[in-house]
Image (cartoon, rainbow, N blue to C red; front, side, top):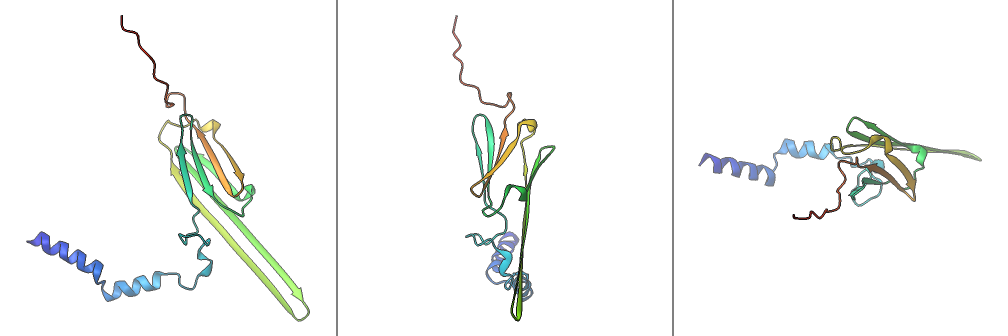
Length: 154
């Protein structure tokens, strides 16, 4: 019986939040921070990432349009791959009786744990092209999937 009461209490809390939690939630939102999105569908400043695997390597694709390769830093520390970026833009305009100064700042940091002993860290490479940062992590020989071998029966 007590189990049922606890479940109902949890459901009740989700359906009817208490007044303080509603207020906390309201004030924790960035309602007036219009620069808090990269205008994607997710309203997030963290770029979308695809992770692919083939027989030879792992490939990480980071969607970061409008950047240049100098904006990125990619580091491997042990089994932790860290990707970060920072970009600052400033524009200043002076005309007759007014001046305008605009600036923007974008940054992100993502970390990925690589399966221990699976990647040859010395052969990792990255390139940035058409708004996509592509990082290739070659697999070590012992991790690569080898083709099936036929064994003769004697």
